[in-house]
Length: 486
Image (tube, rainbow, N blue to C red; front, top):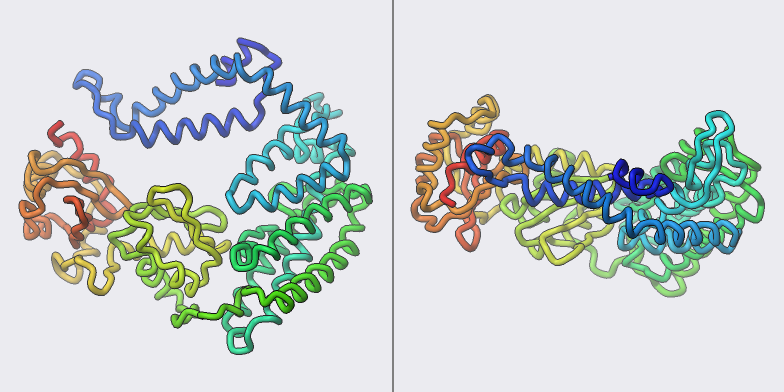
């Protein structure tokens, strides 16, 4: 894509936006064509092998398209960036407010990418390379770099930890022990790493007024650091670790400490006053606390999450980012917000209209996702239609088998599923299960499935069944798909 753009006009520079667009297109093409079937003489290029071919062709087309439409957009972006830079403290204030408000939708990443990687330019005196964006300019030695980053440190290192203290002090006495450890971990995470989503989602929906004040205070911090000519940048976020890493190039960096202490006092007083005055339902002050204890042993955490998400059969994809579980469910209405929050979730987000679900759990998100994936083959919910198929050691037997499927075994699986005429669709989900769509569920041979290594079958509506098979799910899916009657 970039090569095509440079041929059309060497002056075109899309920055990181070209990478973002290419990544989105590649992801969409993978989802669309990963199972595509080509004629027999082109079969080698089918399935996942077709994705890079389609991506390459699409990148050329995108290069031609953006070669025409991007130059005027680039002029507009450069003008907006220059206006923001020349607006000084007001521009910094506007960025700080929008940065926090857009976290609700996740669109803050778009704004951050423009400000930190696109707006403004500086020529590196050592290499002669032109760098763009506030972050790159700061680390290249631009004395004006860091204007849109320094104001994050007082908020993330001092303000939000003080807000956690205020929420703890205003929690009901009988609930302080329950939420004290949670708030402490969130405060330390914000202070050390600058990851603030766990704290913010703890009160974002429970007390929107506090979140609006938090956004305004963030904008004010950005404006104050600009007025005081404080310049300090980060590579990840505004926490103590990045403060130490970026300190060497800072200007008036020492002033962040008194400003941060001032902000800690402001945040504590603002949160304490608003919580008391307006009886805001921050963590620990809810009227109807869940009867389930949030103090789950780690060994029981994954099964508890699976039950709160509607059971193993309801989970299709389990993934995680820095602070959220990113899930795809068969029916996301089966997920219980109350149970998830009792397990320590700060918020539950339902983006779009499909089965997508996001659970904000803080920096332990990746660990929880791993635990859920490991527990999926063995978890059953009381009352869930997952009859046992095989011995108690069936799971271990499946794990020990190699994740390969020959043609004879694939035919045996096809017969157990009712034959090619009965099997309409098959794919692997959640690493350990086959999701099959059949014309007639009565044709499923459960005894034969057991002998082939199946651990359990869960029947859903519309002829959809989930079969627990362990780590061979992907191999079985790939072996069965060519046998489907098209």
